[in-house]
Length: 204
Ligand SMILES: N[C@@H](CCC(=O)N[C@@H](CS)C(=O)NCC(=O)O)C(=O)O
Image 1 (cartoon, rainbow, N blue to C red):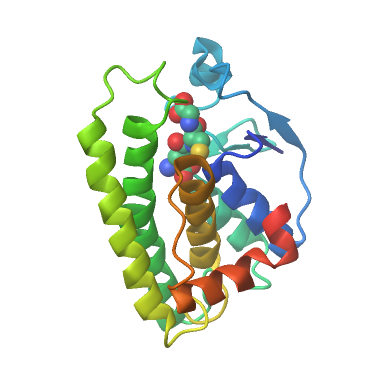
Image 2 (image 1 turned 60 degrees about the vertical axis):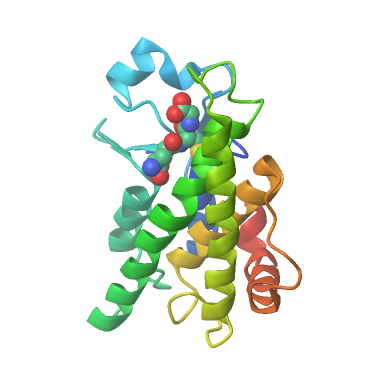
């Protein structure tokens, strides 16, 4: 078993944090996104036809791509401590937040990255600056939404969960690579951010 990954990229980072929380150690292989190694025909043919990272290679030679799917695989193999909830209601709540973070937070930050970053300019056919601006506003208003939710909740979905992990990776992706930090005036979001980014797993 091994994980194809790229240090510093937000989706691979989700898996690294998850594995650190679980105390699971597996070999990694770095694939350089900036050199487009993940888009080489051989990688796309053999490892992931979608080209994205991370990808988990199992011992039988098969592959699981998609960060959420990879962590769900490990959750079945290593249920403790639970990071996707245990009861039906906990699992439903974690799933709700995973989908919200993916669709309403990660997606607009990704649009800012694709349409607004000098780092993606060379590989995006046509950057549309208005698209970046529009999505910056969406992200800012999502910070307000998270701040309101976290006013009454310690974590996004009950206990600390995979939803917090992907929200942390998205918040860092927004702040560090897209110049879109949340405001310190968003006190509840800031408290949550300090808490989850202070966990030892966050530096995995
Ligand atoms: N939904 C996928 C997204 C995978 C993805 O887009 N990964 C990025 C790194 S954060 C990537 O590989 N980008 C380079 C590319 O697509 O060529 C997941 O959660 O794993």
